Image 1 (cartoon, helix red, strand yellow):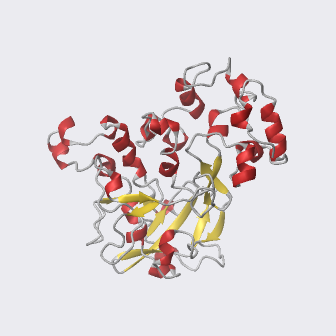
Image 2 (cartoon, helix red, strand yellow; image 1 turned 90 degrees about the horizontal axis):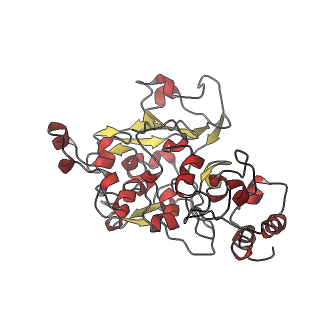
Image 3 (tube, helix red, strand yellow; image 1 turned 45 degrees about the vertical axis):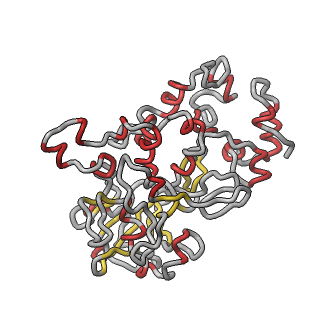
Length: 355
């Protein structure tokens, strides 16, 4: 269960920054906070007014340990066109809570429980509790790949309901989706025009911001071949970053061992990456899952298309590539020339044009 949402009255330790230290961005006190959201990259704070919750105007950047303003700018997320530019007129019910709770009821604004509990991914569980059986519970791991990954994509994607507005309100989560059914019946992905960079996408279609793993993943060869989110992740929790089943490089190599049919077609990993194992550039995710998708300020999360973004892509489409992302003192021409010198790689794929 992902404990992203916590009530500080029950969990006072959930508030990470010291609110006793004055800061011009922080115009609220601990008593104003009904919920805190987040504990890994950023922490946001919500106050309750009437029967709904609203975001307060400052967020804590956990990486840099500083306060930053929090307010979605007009023209950023699609829904900003339908809500005033005022946090206290942007309720979390239609904009957040459906993905941070179980069974959010849009009529009563009530939930079975906050956070991603069992029924979020397994469906109704009362019959299963009374008489445990495979037949009375949904196990996403036993669904075919499309519906299996939809279980995660319902919230790890940028889009909007097909029938927005719903009862006069615009929702930013798939209202009406039930695990095991077709997500596409209630949800559509954020549109993107190839060649244009937007708030949500780089020009090549790669996600530009966090919570778009699904938008990325459906573009990948792995999704096409039937790999699912939980081929790599276990949402019940592991000791590895991002709830990976195993450390990333170990897990990648189980399917992508050297000279395997899936590649890489090289005698060793070092021969493929041209970097020493265990150093930056030596792990699969360094080049195939670069950290280019913004979660807050300059803190980025990994892409999930798994494709290698070339230096030429950076020149023509302005999407960051992993070579100069790491070698920040070098140019795309330097990177392209280096890739062309690697005789075991196709120049037509890794460096198709002269920057």
